[in-house]
Image (cartoon, rainbow, N blue to C red; front, side, top):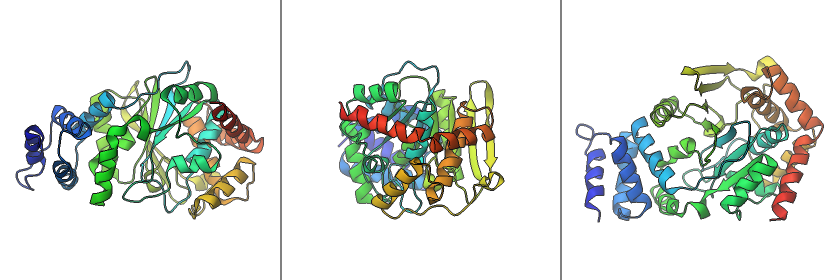
Amino acid sequence: MSQAFRDLLKKVGSGTHTSASLTRAEAESATLMILQQEATPVQVGAFLIAHRIKRPTGTELAGMLDAYDALGPKVAAIDSSQPVAVFSVPYDGRSRTAPLLPLTALVLAAAGCPVLMHGGDRVATKYGVPLLELWQSLGVDWSGLSLPQVQESLAQNQLSFLYVMPHFPALAPLMEARDQLGKRPPFATLELLWCPYAGSAHLISGYVHPPTEAMLQEAFALRGRTGYTTVKGLEGSCDLPRDRTAIMGAHCSDHPDLVRFLLNARDWGLSGTEAPYQDLSTWASSAKEVLQGNQTIALYSGVLWNSGFYLWHLGFAPTLKDGLSLAERLLQDQKAAAQLKTVQDSLAKR
Protein backbone atom coordinates (compact mmCIF):
# COMPACT_ATOMS: atom_id res chain seq x y z
CA MET A 1 0.00 0.00 0.00
CA SER A 2 1.17 3.52 -0.81
CA GLN A 3 0.84 5.80 2.21
CA ALA A 4 1.40 8.84 -0.03
CA PHE A 5 -1.47 7.80 -2.28
CA ARG A 6 -3.62 7.04 0.77
CA ASP A 7 -3.20 10.64 1.90
CA LEU A 8 -4.31 11.96 -1.51
CA LEU A 9 -7.25 9.56 -1.49
CA LYS A 10 -8.33 10.87 1.92
CA LYS A 11 -8.19 14.42 0.58
CA VAL A 12 -10.63 13.81 -2.30
CA GLY A 13 -12.75 11.16 -0.58
CA SER A 14 -13.57 12.67 2.80
CA GLY A 15 -17.14 13.54 1.98
CA THR A 16 -19.22 16.54 0.98
CA HIS A 17 -18.10 18.86 3.77
CA THR A 18 -14.44 17.95 4.25
CA SER A 19 -13.11 16.72 0.90
CA ALA A 20 -10.87 19.04 -1.09
CA SER A 21 -9.50 19.27 -4.60
CA LEU A 22 -5.94 18.29 -5.33
CA THR A 23 -3.32 20.75 -6.42
CA ARG A 24 -1.87 20.33 -9.89
CA ALA A 25 1.27 18.71 -8.45
CA GLU A 26 -0.81 16.38 -6.26
CA ALA A 27 -2.98 15.34 -9.20
CA GLU A 28 0.13 14.57 -11.24
CA SER A 29 1.61 12.58 -8.34
CA ALA A 30 -1.62 10.58 -7.85
CA THR A 31 -1.80 9.79 -11.57
CA LEU A 32 1.82 8.68 -11.70
CA MET A 33 1.27 6.38 -8.73
CA ILE A 34 -1.77 4.86 -10.45
CA LEU A 35 -0.07 4.40 -13.83
CA GLN A 36 3.09 2.99 -12.27
CA GLN A 37 1.00 0.67 -10.07
CA GLU A 38 2.35 2.03 -6.81
CA ALA A 39 -1.23 2.40 -5.57
CA THR A 40 -3.08 -0.84 -4.83
CA PRO A 41 -6.16 -1.88 -6.84
CA VAL A 42 -8.34 -1.09 -3.80
CA GLN A 43 -6.83 2.37 -3.54
CA VAL A 44 -7.26 2.99 -7.26
CA GLY A 45 -10.92 1.92 -7.26
CA ALA A 46 -11.68 4.07 -4.23
CA PHE A 47 -9.92 7.05 -5.79
CA LEU A 48 -11.76 6.76 -9.10
CA ILE A 49 -15.17 6.66 -7.44
CA ALA A 50 -14.36 9.39 -4.89
CA HIS A 51 -12.99 11.65 -7.61
CA ARG A 52 -16.04 11.06 -9.78
CA ILE A 53 -18.37 11.98 -6.91
CA LYS A 54 -16.34 15.08 -6.03
CA ARG A 55 -16.00 16.05 -9.71
CA PRO A 56 -12.60 16.99 -11.15
CA THR A 57 -11.33 20.52 -11.54
CA GLY A 58 -9.42 21.98 -14.46
CA THR A 59 -6.38 22.22 -12.19
CA GLU A 60 -6.56 18.51 -11.41
CA LEU A 61 -6.98 17.64 -15.07
CA ALA A 62 -3.90 19.71 -15.90
CA GLY A 63 -1.88 17.72 -13.35
CA MET A 64 -3.23 14.43 -14.66
CA LEU A 65 -2.21 15.47 -18.17
CA ASP A 66 1.27 16.29 -16.88
CA ALA A 67 1.55 12.65 -15.83
CA TYR A 68 0.28 11.44 -19.22
CA ASP A 69 2.91 13.56 -20.92
CA ALA A 70 5.61 12.14 -18.65
CA LEU A 71 4.76 8.48 -19.27
CA GLY A 72 2.73 8.38 -22.48
CA PRO A 73 3.83 8.07 -26.11
CA LYS A 74 4.39 11.00 -28.43
CA VAL A 75 4.26 10.92 -32.21
CA ALA A 76 7.31 12.80 -33.47
CA ALA A 77 6.74 16.06 -35.30
CA ILE A 78 6.48 16.05 -39.07
CA ASP A 79 7.68 18.71 -41.47
CA SER A 80 4.43 20.61 -42.07
CA SER A 81 3.58 24.24 -42.67
CA GLN A 82 0.19 23.57 -41.06
CA PRO A 83 -0.50 22.48 -37.49
CA VAL A 84 -1.61 18.86 -37.31
CA ALA A 85 -5.32 18.52 -36.51
CA VAL A 86 -5.47 16.14 -33.53
CA PHE A 87 -8.98 14.81 -32.95
CA SER A 88 -9.64 13.64 -29.39
CA VAL A 89 -12.86 11.71 -28.76
CA PRO A 90 -14.14 9.38 -25.99
CA TYR A 91 -12.51 5.97 -26.16
CA ASP A 92 -15.78 4.21 -25.26
CA GLY A 93 -16.93 4.84 -28.80
CA ARG A 94 -20.32 5.24 -30.44
CA SER A 95 -23.50 3.20 -30.07
CA ARG A 96 -26.41 5.36 -31.27
CA THR A 97 -25.31 7.59 -34.14
CA ALA A 98 -23.14 6.64 -37.10
CA PRO A 99 -19.57 7.96 -36.70
CA LEU A 100 -18.30 10.45 -39.27
CA LEU A 101 -14.72 11.18 -38.20
CA PRO A 102 -12.86 8.59 -40.32
CA LEU A 103 -14.56 9.91 -43.46
CA THR A 104 -14.08 13.53 -42.44
CA ALA A 105 -10.41 12.79 -41.82
CA LEU A 106 -10.03 11.34 -45.33
CA VAL A 107 -11.55 14.47 -46.87
CA LEU A 108 -9.27 16.72 -44.79
CA ALA A 109 -6.19 14.68 -45.70
CA ALA A 110 -7.15 14.81 -49.38
CA ALA A 111 -7.16 18.61 -49.06
CA GLY A 112 -3.66 18.58 -47.56
CA CYS A 113 -4.67 18.93 -43.91
CA PRO A 114 -2.64 16.58 -41.69
CA VAL A 115 -4.85 14.62 -39.27
CA LEU A 116 -3.91 12.49 -36.26
CA MET A 117 -6.42 10.47 -34.23
CA HIS A 118 -5.91 8.26 -31.19
CA GLY A 119 -7.91 5.60 -29.37
CA GLY A 120 -8.03 2.11 -27.96
CA ASP A 121 -10.24 -0.96 -27.77
CA ARG A 122 -13.88 -1.28 -26.71
CA VAL A 123 -14.12 0.00 -23.17
CA ALA A 124 -16.67 0.67 -20.43
CA THR A 125 -19.09 2.08 -19.95
CA LYS A 126 -20.62 2.30 -23.41
CA TYR A 127 -18.53 -0.37 -25.13
CA GLY A 128 -19.36 1.46 -28.35
CA VAL A 129 -17.56 0.94 -31.63
CA PRO A 130 -14.09 2.54 -31.40
CA LEU A 131 -12.22 4.34 -34.16
CA LEU A 132 -9.80 1.43 -34.55
CA GLU A 133 -12.60 -0.96 -35.62
CA LEU A 134 -14.14 1.61 -37.95
CA TRP A 135 -10.83 1.96 -39.76
CA GLN A 136 -10.36 -1.80 -39.87
CA SER A 137 -13.75 -2.15 -41.55
CA LEU A 138 -12.42 0.18 -44.27
CA GLY A 139 -9.35 -2.00 -44.79
CA VAL A 140 -6.97 0.08 -42.68
CA ASP A 141 -5.45 -1.61 -39.62
CA TRP A 142 -3.48 0.79 -37.47
CA SER A 143 -3.02 -1.63 -34.57
CA GLY A 144 0.41 -2.99 -35.46
CA LEU A 145 2.20 0.28 -36.16
CA SER A 146 5.29 1.37 -34.24
CA LEU A 147 5.55 5.01 -33.23
CA PRO A 148 7.93 5.76 -36.14
CA GLN A 149 5.42 4.14 -38.51
CA VAL A 150 2.58 6.26 -37.07
CA GLN A 151 4.72 9.33 -37.72
CA GLU A 152 5.66 8.09 -41.20
CA SER A 153 2.00 7.70 -42.21
CA LEU A 154 1.24 11.18 -40.92
CA ALA A 155 4.12 12.65 -42.90
CA GLN A 156 3.48 10.72 -46.13
CA ASN A 157 -0.30 10.35 -46.15
CA GLN A 158 -1.39 13.41 -44.12
CA LEU A 159 -3.29 10.92 -41.97
CA SER A 160 -2.52 8.59 -39.09
CA PHE A 161 -3.88 6.92 -35.98
CA LEU A 162 -2.21 6.12 -32.68
CA TYR A 163 -3.52 2.88 -31.20
CA VAL A 164 -2.55 3.61 -27.62
CA MET A 165 -2.69 0.19 -25.95
CA PRO A 166 0.71 -1.19 -27.09
CA HIS A 167 2.39 2.21 -26.72
CA PHE A 168 0.89 3.18 -23.36
CA PRO A 169 0.56 -0.13 -21.47
CA ALA A 170 0.26 1.75 -18.16
CA LEU A 171 -3.34 2.53 -19.15
CA ALA A 172 -4.37 -1.14 -19.00
CA PRO A 173 -5.02 -1.24 -15.22
CA LEU A 174 -7.07 1.95 -15.51
CA MET A 175 -9.18 0.43 -18.27
CA GLU A 176 -9.70 -2.73 -16.22
CA ALA A 177 -10.76 -0.72 -13.18
CA ARG A 178 -13.14 1.29 -15.34
CA ASP A 179 -14.68 -1.95 -16.57
CA GLN A 180 -15.12 -3.31 -13.05
CA LEU A 181 -16.55 -0.08 -11.66
CA GLY A 182 -19.04 0.39 -14.49
CA LYS A 183 -18.65 4.18 -14.39
CA ARG A 184 -16.61 6.65 -16.39
CA PRO A 185 -13.98 8.06 -14.01
CA PRO A 186 -12.53 11.56 -14.44
CA PHE A 187 -9.52 9.94 -16.12
CA ALA A 188 -11.80 9.30 -19.10
CA THR A 189 -11.94 13.06 -19.60
CA LEU A 190 -8.22 12.99 -20.40
CA GLU A 191 -9.09 11.27 -23.66
CA LEU A 192 -10.55 14.62 -24.73
CA LEU A 193 -7.55 16.69 -23.55
CA TRP A 194 -4.55 14.55 -24.37
CA CYS A 195 -2.48 15.45 -27.43
CA PRO A 196 -0.03 12.61 -28.20
CA TYR A 197 1.81 14.66 -30.84
CA ALA A 198 5.15 16.39 -30.29
CA GLY A 199 4.83 19.09 -32.96
CA SER A 200 2.56 22.05 -33.64
CA ALA A 201 -1.01 20.87 -33.27
CA HIS A 202 -4.56 22.15 -33.23
CA LEU A 203 -6.41 19.95 -30.74
CA ILE A 204 -10.10 19.30 -31.39
CA SER A 205 -11.95 17.99 -28.32
CA GLY A 206 -15.48 16.60 -28.24
CA TYR A 207 -17.69 16.78 -25.17
CA VAL A 208 -21.27 16.21 -24.03
CA HIS A 209 -21.93 18.33 -20.94
CA PRO A 210 -21.23 22.10 -20.87
CA PRO A 211 -19.33 21.94 -17.52
CA THR A 212 -16.80 19.69 -19.24
CA GLU A 213 -15.94 22.46 -21.68
CA ALA A 214 -15.19 24.83 -18.80
CA MET A 215 -12.87 22.25 -17.24
CA LEU A 216 -11.11 21.76 -20.57
CA GLN A 217 -10.58 25.50 -20.91
CA GLU A 218 -9.10 25.77 -17.43
CA ALA A 219 -6.78 22.82 -17.96
CA PHE A 220 -5.65 24.10 -21.36
CA ALA A 221 -4.99 27.57 -19.93
CA LEU A 222 -2.85 26.17 -17.11
CA ARG A 223 -0.84 24.11 -19.58
CA GLY A 224 -0.42 26.97 -22.03
CA ARG A 225 -2.32 25.37 -24.91
CA THR A 226 -3.84 27.97 -27.25
CA GLY A 227 -4.60 26.13 -30.49
CA TYR A 228 -7.72 24.13 -29.74
CA THR A 229 -11.40 23.76 -30.57
CA THR A 230 -14.17 22.33 -28.39
CA VAL A 231 -17.16 20.62 -30.00
CA LYS A 232 -20.48 19.67 -28.39
CA GLY A 233 -20.65 16.78 -30.77
CA LEU A 234 -22.61 13.61 -31.33
CA GLU A 235 -22.19 11.34 -28.29
CA GLY A 236 -19.31 13.52 -27.12
CA SER A 237 -17.38 13.14 -30.36
CA CYS A 238 -16.03 15.82 -32.70
CA ASP A 239 -18.86 15.13 -35.19
CA LEU A 240 -21.05 18.20 -35.66
CA PRO A 241 -24.79 17.47 -35.40
CA ARG A 242 -27.26 18.26 -38.15
CA ASP A 243 -30.50 17.93 -36.18
CA ARG A 244 -29.66 20.75 -33.75
CA THR A 245 -27.46 23.82 -33.57
CA ALA A 246 -23.78 22.89 -33.62
CA ILE A 247 -21.93 24.52 -30.72
CA MET A 248 -18.15 24.99 -30.97
CA GLY A 249 -15.55 27.10 -29.25
CA ALA A 250 -12.10 27.98 -30.58
CA HIS A 251 -9.02 29.43 -28.93
CA CYS A 252 -5.90 30.75 -30.61
CA SER A 253 -2.74 32.50 -29.45
CA ASP A 254 -3.78 35.98 -30.62
CA HIS A 255 -7.19 35.99 -28.91
CA PRO A 256 -7.53 35.72 -25.11
CA ASP A 257 -11.13 34.46 -25.05
CA LEU A 258 -12.90 31.46 -26.47
CA VAL A 259 -14.55 32.33 -29.80
CA ARG A 260 -18.01 30.78 -29.95
CA PHE A 261 -19.45 29.24 -33.12
CA LEU A 262 -23.16 28.50 -33.41
CA LEU A 263 -23.95 26.93 -36.77
CA ASN A 264 -27.10 25.30 -38.06
CA ALA A 265 -26.95 22.80 -40.91
CA ARG A 266 -30.46 23.89 -41.90
CA ASP A 267 -29.05 27.21 -43.10
CA TRP A 268 -26.95 25.29 -45.62
CA GLY A 269 -29.56 22.78 -46.74
CA LEU A 270 -27.91 19.95 -44.81
CA SER A 271 -30.20 19.42 -41.82
CA GLY A 272 -31.80 16.07 -41.11
CA THR A 273 -32.06 13.16 -38.75
CA GLU A 274 -28.70 11.78 -37.69
CA ALA A 275 -27.87 8.47 -39.34
CA PRO A 276 -28.17 5.68 -36.77
CA TYR A 277 -25.36 3.25 -36.03
CA GLN A 278 -26.48 -0.33 -36.66
CA ASP A 279 -23.40 -2.51 -36.97
CA LEU A 280 -19.88 -2.35 -38.34
CA SER A 281 -20.68 -4.03 -41.65
CA THR A 282 -23.56 -1.67 -42.40
CA TRP A 283 -21.45 1.34 -41.47
CA ALA A 284 -18.55 0.26 -43.69
CA SER A 285 -20.87 -0.33 -46.65
CA SER A 286 -22.39 3.14 -46.28
CA ALA A 287 -18.99 4.75 -45.75
CA LYS A 288 -17.63 3.28 -48.99
CA GLU A 289 -20.68 4.56 -50.88
CA VAL A 290 -20.10 8.05 -49.47
CA LEU A 291 -16.48 7.93 -50.64
CA GLN A 292 -17.79 7.08 -54.12
CA GLY A 293 -19.81 10.30 -54.02
CA ASN A 294 -23.23 8.69 -53.49
CA GLN A 295 -25.38 11.55 -52.18
CA THR A 296 -28.36 9.30 -51.44
CA ILE A 297 -26.57 7.63 -48.51
CA ALA A 298 -27.73 8.93 -45.12
CA LEU A 299 -24.13 9.51 -44.00
CA TYR A 300 -23.33 11.76 -46.94
CA SER A 301 -24.82 15.02 -45.64
CA GLY A 302 -23.16 14.57 -42.26
CA VAL A 303 -19.75 13.98 -43.81
CA LEU A 304 -20.19 16.99 -46.10
CA TRP A 305 -21.29 19.22 -43.18
CA ASN A 306 -18.37 18.19 -40.99
CA SER A 307 -15.73 18.22 -43.70
CA GLY A 308 -16.81 21.61 -44.97
CA PHE A 309 -16.72 23.12 -41.49
CA TYR A 310 -13.30 21.76 -40.62
CA LEU A 311 -11.79 22.74 -43.98
CA TRP A 312 -12.92 26.30 -43.30
CA HIS A 313 -12.14 26.30 -39.59
CA LEU A 314 -8.63 24.90 -40.06
CA GLY A 315 -7.75 27.41 -42.77
CA PHE A 316 -8.12 25.38 -45.98
CA ALA A 317 -11.06 27.44 -47.28
CA PRO A 318 -11.75 31.18 -46.86
CA THR A 319 -15.43 30.79 -45.96
CA LEU A 320 -17.77 28.04 -44.76
CA LYS A 321 -19.43 28.12 -48.18
CA ASP A 322 -16.07 27.52 -49.82
CA GLY A 323 -15.31 24.77 -47.34
CA LEU A 324 -18.54 22.97 -48.18
CA SER A 325 -17.86 23.37 -51.91
CA LEU A 326 -14.34 22.01 -51.54
CA ALA A 327 -15.57 19.06 -49.47
CA GLU A 328 -18.19 18.27 -52.08
CA ARG A 329 -15.59 18.31 -54.88
CA LEU A 330 -13.27 16.02 -52.93
CA LEU A 331 -16.11 13.55 -52.43
CA GLN A 332 -17.58 13.79 -55.92
CA ASP A 333 -14.18 13.57 -57.63
CA GLN A 334 -13.41 10.59 -55.36
CA LYS A 335 -10.26 12.27 -54.03
CA ALA A 336 -11.17 11.14 -50.51
CA ALA A 337 -11.59 7.58 -51.84
CA ALA A 338 -8.16 7.85 -53.47
CA GLN A 339 -6.77 9.02 -50.13
CA LEU A 340 -8.13 5.86 -48.49
CA LYS A 341 -6.44 3.73 -51.19
CA THR A 342 -3.17 5.58 -50.60
CA VAL A 343 -3.31 4.83 -46.88
CA GLN A 344 -4.24 1.18 -47.50
CA ASP A 345 -1.31 0.72 -49.89
CA SER A 346 1.08 2.52 -47.58
CA LEU A 347 0.25 0.36 -44.58
CA ALA A 348 0.32 -2.81 -46.67
CA LYS A 349 4.00 -2.14 -47.42
CA ARG A 350 5.09 -1.75 -43.81
